[in-house]
Amino acid sequence: MAIIDRIMAKAQANVKHIVLPEGEETRNAQAAAIIAAEGLAKLTLLGNPDKIKEVAAGASLEGINIVDPETSEKCAEYAATLYELRKAKGMTEEKAAATVKDPMYYGIMMVKNGEADGLVSGAIHSTGDMLRPALQIIKSKPGIKTVSSCFLMECPDKSYGDNGVMIFADCAVNIDPDAEALANIALGAADSARALANMEPRVAM
Image (cartoon, rainbow, N blue to C red; front, side, top):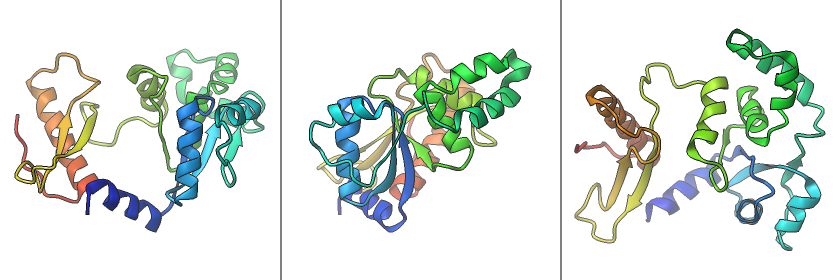
């Protein structure tokens, strides 16, 4: 079974709530329809409902929650939480109220409050714009000294990696890592290999 099929089977067996903050982007709305139809996740799309339905281009959004951060009744609660988390860094109550209306920050607050299990973004946001609110609000896993990214590849030639499956890191976060950062990235990549591919990693630098 291909790695993506194994991941999809795990998702269907343990359905999680995923928030997509780029709901007004065509690929996100249409991908959400596919994910919902295949029972891979419970979904929340963030954005203007009319705009989301427009970019979905006829794809069924049945069963998908749509929330507009501009008008959500959760904004006051999220703003209060954000203010408490960031007031030592100069956050004001007024700025917090405005910030949580940004879909990226609103989505991160959903995860922080336990109202979503995860967030997927990156179609129209840079890596920095994605990571900044996550690091400010959720922060990194205890013990992680270097935040990094990775991607998963499966090669037709099964002699590579673990039966053709490999993790590559870091891909988008650290421009010029020193030796300690590289070691931390390698450890993070190994953890990702265990979590995503259920394999015992062998690390090459």
